[in-house]
Image (cartoon, rainbow, N blue to C red; front, side, top):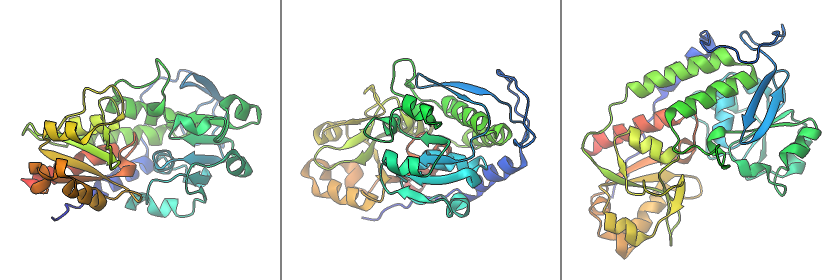
Length: 334
């Protein structure tokens, strides 16, 4: 069966980055006023204090030596124009999108997978910006309080916070945009962040969701037991914005395991396949067609697949593009 390739939105993303470089005034009031250092970018104001996943972090000035973990955080730093301060990245989920490829090609990759504390501290960062809260486990990069004592600030993408009162439930685009603005304040790029949010909102408003009432399953990974997009995270947010009904929406998690029998019983109209370097969409199709439980599904027999890159499946600047990509592919499916 043929595989629908993911459509690109290069022009839209180029518009976002152009807007970021141009800059617009940040309409939000400054909650923590402070004198602006002449060396800081226009609009920056310090100190900035945030309650990040239950850890209070104060930035007296813009971080100058940034290490990022995961694609979502790396791409956000690049999109905000702070790529020249990236001294290393790790655990990337795939290639950078076309419009960020040039900005990201010079960033050193410290580790292909989850980095150790030795690797990260060896780069001498003043900020570690992680896409997962688990990156700061004692057996990973290290405890956040201990890193702070070493002069290393830490920040977790807020959508990845797991503690009570901090976990998004559910994640919304308003929350994603708020996270972008907060990162802009931390990095000293509030004008770039405000411009990016404005253009992302406009791009999201321009998407026409499907009105066909289609159901779907978000197949992220797994073979014996599939790992699917559940009811409160980025997959649910993206599917809902595209006009799709998630058969796993009732599961109170961002991602969850779901048996093949349950998926077959729900008989989704279309199947979202997450394409990754370690588990491609093509491989997932082979599994679906070779599994007697799923091979009989009309969506499998008719090749009703929607494909999305893994890097677009975690909260970040690619989520709006992911919505538009899904609706484009739905249109192609007819």
